[in-house]
Image (cartoon, rainbow, N blue to C red; front, side, top):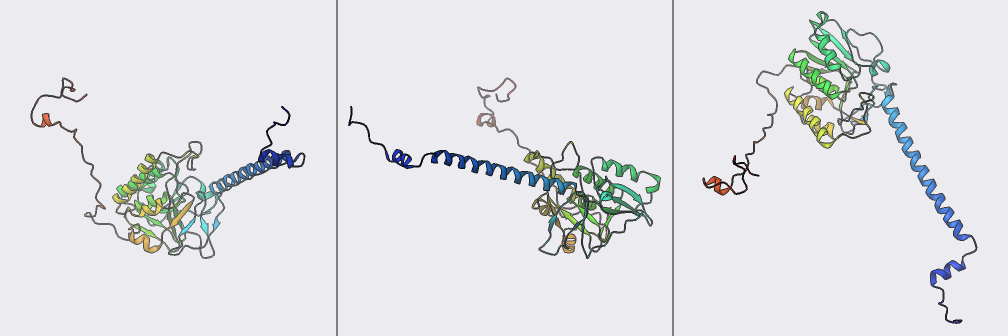
Length: 320
């Protein structure tokens, strides 16, 4: 009936006061804001991916200031090395060529040098462990007593195999002055019977990361399970203990993201026993290996007292 219409509510009165078309303009501006936010997010994601691709593929040496105690975290580039005004080029026995760029990014190669030394230079790829074994089995390598390392690292499994082969053959390791031994390379370094690091050499560690099946040696976009990462970390610590290196060294690796590198000071190299000018005696076996208890299935009170089997037991006595 006329006169009994419900009066407009507060929200309705507010909308009616708006100029014609204002609601549509507000909706348009809101949609525009959402579109700008999505474009910005996509751009940031693309920029991050581009920077990561650049980090992984760069072979040009990266100028970096020299690490000092308390200032030891540096970017890690898996295919190049750091350079600076106070760094020269390492001298690698048996090798006379570029020590950076594509030469360092290539799969590891081995060269026979004078005075019982050989050089291992380049990335540790899947299969490098077997390549080192074949190299050491050649007649030319029969007199090798020291392996000089210059490597940005790579495959952890191959690095551990290389370390054990070096130790079994009582071959020492050395990182030359101004040399580079990063990522998985310190695991190889640990395998030396004696271990030396020259002036201005960089020996650095970081977290283990997944390996892409399409391109060996590069981080995978799919994270490995926590259990697998923990198992690999335990294997690295076990290797260090076997080689007489303090496995506490690997705490520094676990604390350092894979895109960074923790460069060890001279004092740390000595404290963790990664540098050892003399071979350890036969009595040194490193930290004790863990022992795991064997748990027996619980016994029931009747079984412990020699009574009847429980009613829910199989004929052979095992519980259902």
